[in-house]
Length: 221
Image (tube, rainbow, N blue to C red; front, side, top):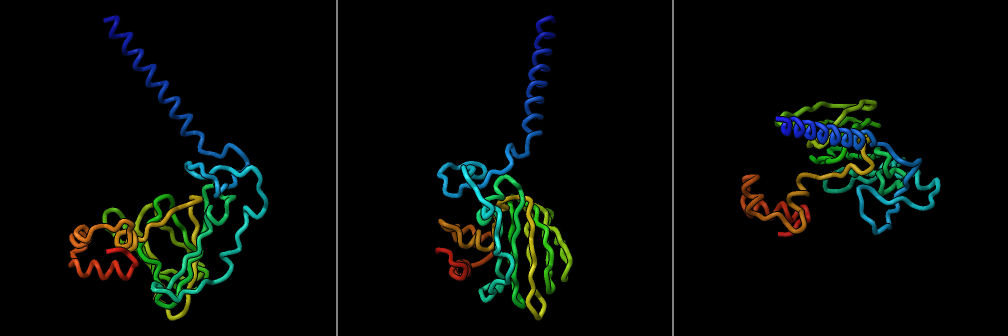
């Protein structure tokens, strides 16, 4: 009986110790230095980037969102990112931005950001936007100049310009590198390619239709 009591005390002590360590790990999400400007050329791979030994103001600057970008492509839209790859000073800061330009009928196709929630602000024009929940519920509405809309982290979402003129929006993310997976390109243009049998069965398409989609998206057969 005494041995059982000692065992119980030991188990409780171990559990308290683990909980204490876990709480310290969880409680330290903040930066441990003023800045950690990303050294994008460093061969060391980590969750983020190694810090530059020296940095300058230019590491925190990017002018790429100031002007509209051409939208004369297959989708009629262009996304200009402003994340850690363009602004090394964002490393460890947990934020980034992007500009999305749309021609009339332009689409930012269904995609996800695996590491971030997105919030967009319409600069001009009108957009139909939406996201799909894991219960397959579409949450969608039309937003106009000055409006804001949020897309929850990891959920499939899209924006389309159904207006007659151009449109543009600024997106913000709670990650220095939110990542993006465009659903169609991810599945039909992967390297090495996803097998036709998988895509045919998943989308209820013939092998010929699968190959046609792959060819349009630049995928390999």
